[in-house]
Every structure is written in C-alpha cells, then in structure tokens.
Image 1 (cartoon, rainbow, N blue to C red):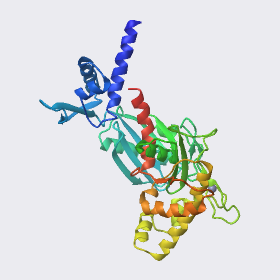
Image 2 (image 1 turned 180 degrees about the horizontal axis):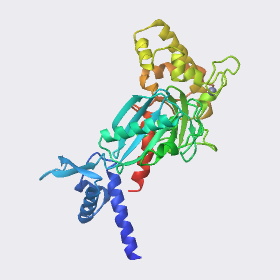
Image 3 (image 1 turned 120 degrees about the vertical axis):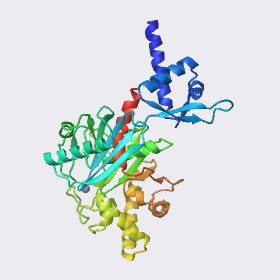
Length: 376
Ligand SMILES: [Zn+2]
C-alpha cells in the first residue's frame, strides 16, 4: 500500500509538472521547484521524463534567473501530439492542425463541393492525409480529427441528428474513420466556435455565443461546458421564427426564422459578392451596401435582445462574419439594444469574440487536445 501511495504521489508530481507548461510559455527547473514546492531531485526526474517522452523541448536559456549563470528554459513540444480540426462547407473545406501547445500549427482551405457520397468522403480524407504528410505529421502524433459540421450532432459526437443545410442527417463518423488511422468526432459548428472563444477568454464565465458564419448558430456555455439540453437541440435560436407568415424562406422549410435575417447568407441576401467583398464595399461607403448593413444591424439587434430576454449572460458575437465586425459595430448594436430592452440595462452585455481564423475547425480540435492532456 505504501508503495502504491508513493507511486500515486510521483504520478501527481509528474502531471502537475506537465500541466505547469500550460500556464507558462517557458519554464526553468528552478521555477518548477518554486511553483510546485518540489525537491530538486524530483523536479530533475520529472523534467527528464518529459524530455524522454518528447513532451517538452529545450527552448534556449532563461535570463530571469537573477545572479550567476543562465538556466536552461524548457517549453512544450508543439508537435508532441496534434489534433486535426476541419469544417465542411457546401463548396470548400477548411483544415487545421492544432499542436500540443493548443496553438494552430498549420491550416489550409481547399475547394471541394459537398456531396453526400462515398467519392466525396474519400476525397476529403485523402486531402487530410496529404495535408498531414506535407507537414510531416505521422499517425502516431495525431490524436484525432474533430469535424465541425453545419448541423446538430449526437451527444457522443458520432452522428448528425439534424443536417438540413448539407442534407446529411444520419451521417456517422464511421464513413471518415474507415479511411483514417485515428478517431473522428463530430461537433455542431456553433458549439465549436463557442469552445474556441471560451478557450481564449480570461473570465471563463457562463456566456451565450452567437456564431455568425454562412449560417447562424447559438451555443450556451454553462459551467465551462456546452449546454446541450435533453436531446442536443439547445442553442438553435436560428430557427426561432419572428415572421412565420410573410418572412423569408428558411432552409428548415419554414418562414421568418432568425437565420434568414442574421446569418452571413442573409447579409448577402442572394447577391453574388462574398462577405469579404461586402465589408470592402461597406468601408468604401457604397450607399446600397450601407442600407443593407443598417437593416442587418436592426434585425441582429432584435435577435440579440430576444436572446438576452431569455438568458441574462454575456452575449458574444463570434464566427467568420463576426471577424469583420469591430467596436463600431458593437456600439451601433448597443444603441439599438438600449431602445429595444424591456428594462434598464446596468451594463453592456454584448461583446465581440476574439477567435482568429477558422474558429469552427480550431474549436473542433481543442476538445480532443484537452481530453488527451488531462490523461498525461
Ligand atoms: Zn428555420
């Protein structure tokens, strides 16, 4: 028993040492000793074990050690293990590799029209394998692939339970996993964006994420977890209808859904320009685009106000379209929200997300990494 107790303490020391690297860019042996109150021999043994397992690497010398000679600094080895993340769109695919340090190492976007056919899944998985080969990532390093999808997925992340945008309801991870030598997990795209945002957030407080991409999605983060509800259908405010009689037709088959007013597609509203072009024209003071933008802000403010009436938590605008928004957008929405609110608001609750490029793909990779890190 005493032996087992000792092993457990050693294991805990080792795990704590590894986890400390997620709080600091670089560490010296002395910092580890100080922060974890370890003896020098224990810290030395743990460092050696981390080096032997290729989990950390030498990262030059530290200048913060005060007097005397400089100490060796260590950092996480970004390619010790890697999670892949991808998002499937109607006409293209984005793909990222997120390293052990939880930073995006590589990313790519390629054209590939979606089709719910074997030939498509074969093409996607071939492209993923070419991507990993190009970046010298082998199957042993890759812990899995997270796929962010425009649809609701089962609680275990293995099946699409509602996928009307790409018409792939019933799709399972099996079709990808048969071509790839690592596990595949599905994520609802809005959930993935919320995960990517929460990862960057300092507060980690409960929040609602309004994910505005080609389509709209909502995700609620409660106690650090996505709130899925009884059947995984929480956060589908995009299909709350505000004009079921005369509203615009939604892909769900009904009319007047918030999706048809607040999504990226709604912003373009059948025009041929892209989101990037839209915002370029907006900044060029194009009159027609200005009008479209004001109308979009009006609708978006109504949607946000409804969401706020339902749940009193910070609301974060996130997703690909939100990346083009700035503080002026938040101010314009605040002005509208102040007029719409049923009661006085003591402080602003609307914020802009911080996630960079490809938040869905990154957010689909991060949970795989976190699960892996927790078991080291
Ligand atoms: Zn709808």
